[in-house]
Length: 211
Length: 257
Image 1 (cartoon, each protein chain N blue to C red):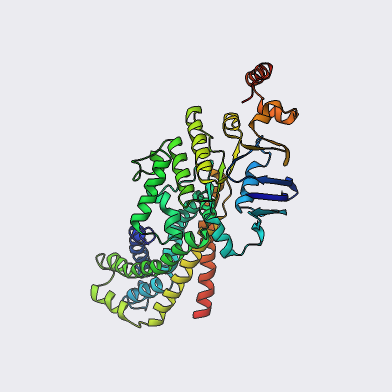
Image 2 (image 1 turned 90 degrees about the vertical axis):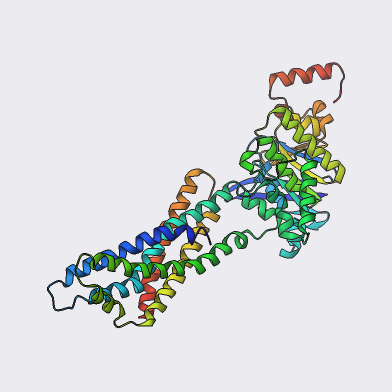
């Protein structure tokens, strides 16, 4: 949990702030001069990050950071015969090595996504209020407008599904790696690539089913 | 005692082991020797259950290994200790944590009992004071000894060693051989060792099997090695001209080992 959670906080914070900032700036650019009030920026940043950007981008990045780490760790154990040694002792290695990671990911990643969503909104504030696109009260008005709690439910569902996918795919790649450093590199890369593809597919399916 | 009956193993179209029928004696050092690629490691992995045979059966004291339920297999595995070629010590654990791992997983021993057993095993392998070291901080020989300590911590009935001397200098290799032999004799363990180290063969081989192209082509003990007329065996054991000269001199002088 420490590796997945605490170890990923810094990158999640950085990404979240910039996601929020970019979303706010780009939306401000698009509505400038139009009939849409500027305070909509806060509303759009909030919902875009909660529904889509926080769970998806955070988990895509975590697939790279955490997923490749898991694949390499378990793959290394396979290649150095650590898994064989455990099997001979009678340990159910899939359960011993993979299940704790899965449980940790399911617990911690939704928390990281929630932190990401919060910080994205803050990032949006920092991008548009000091630069006088709109006032602080206007931004906060937007953030508080038309809040639908169902969006948070969607965010949690996405984060749980994505957490499961990135952990299981990465651990699978590592567990069944063949011998050789090239194979370990491939396993680590495949963990990220396949996790990312499945996350995006699942994102579409969940969006279709829940909206 | 471990016994195999007509054991075959194929990987796709390639058959690696052909009809291996062998009896590995209890309380003895059973050595499986052969050239690289002869099937030694595959045979060892079949015997410990890391691979499943394509055909044939394996018996542990008349119990068919293949017919065991998961629960029975787990119980049997607690009686098996294995030393891997690379020691397979867990990098992220200290020596103490490595050795106590089987106890942590499968016993209800108290912390005090576990620590006592760890220190007992380390003393047995002549390696004390390294409890808090990590495997990367140990030499190759020390890692092998920790591997042996971990393999014997649950007092196994069966001990498997996959090339225990690989990467070691001759002196350390001899120490490891003697250690394995002493443990085998003291505890009446069925020990099976994969090796192509001729010193091991001559020093410890109570019962030797020669594997050639996936078949057992010779069986005997270290005394039989010198006097055997089996050409495959002679080619393998005495590949070096120096050893051939030694053999011829020994035979000439009527000496046995």
